[in-house]
Image (tube, rainbow, N blue to C red; front, side, top):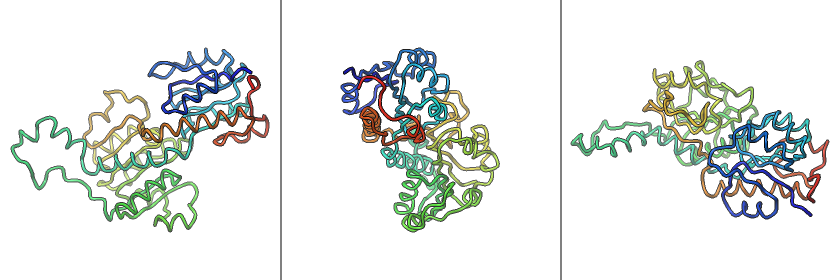
Length: 344
C-alpha cells in the first residue's frame, strides 16, 4: 500500500525525522525561511494526507479549508503552542490538530533563567564592555560600582501562567535561589503543588506590585493578548525585571519600550516578540536594559529532537487509526474517526 503523503514545512532535527521520511511519502520545504503563504495554499491543493507545521506557518481557515477539500486529515504542529492554527476551522472540517507538549519544559525554563540572570547581572553589557576594549581603556581591573545588578536570593519571583513551564521556572527560583514565589493563573494549582514549590497564589495586580522578577508563561489567547500593557507595567517596581518566553503579543511592545526608557521597570529579558523576526531598527534593539534572544526557548538538542519524535508519534498513531497522544481538538475525534482515508 502507498504511504500517506505528508508535507513538512521545514527539516527537523534528530533520528525520528529519518524514520518519518521512511514511514511517509514526505515532501520537505528545503529553505531556511518558512514557506510563504502562497506556497502553502499551492501545496494545500495537491492532495496531501497531512502537514507538519511550525509556529511561523500561517495555518488559517483559507489554508485548512483548501487542504481538507483535497484530502488532508491531520496537521501535526512542531511546537507546544498552536496560535498560528485556526483550530476551530480545522475541527469544522474534520482535521485533527496535534502539538508537542511536555518535551520542552526544562529547556524553556532554563532559557528563562538565562534571561533572568543576564538581565539581573548585566551579562550582555559586560560582555560587550570587555570585547569592545572599553574595559582595557578604562585602566582599572575592578571598581566597586561597575555593573551593579540585582541579587536574586531572598527576592520575590512572580509567575504569570502556572502550567508546566511556569512551575519549572518557579521551582528553580524557590529551590535554587531561595526566592519567594507568587503566581497568577486562570486556575489555582492544587494545594500539594503550592506546598511543594512554596508558591503563593495572588491576583495579577498584587503579583506585579510585589515581584522583583516577573516571568510570563501563558499561551496566546484572546484573553491574554496585550494583558501586560501600560497600566500593568506602571504597577511594577521600578527595580523589577520582566521576562517573556511565552508569546510576544502578550505584552504591549510600545508600552514596554516606554517602560524601559522611562524607568517604570529596570530591565527585561525577551525571547519572543510581537513581530518575528525582530527588525534591526526596532526600538528594543537600541536599549541597554533589555536582553534579546531570537525565540530559542526550546533550542536544545534534547528538546528539539524530542519534539520531532512527538510529531512522529502523533502521525504514527493517526496512521494506525488511533487518536494521536497530543490531540488539541479532541472534539474532532467524536465526529471523524482517526486514520488516513487512503494509503493504509
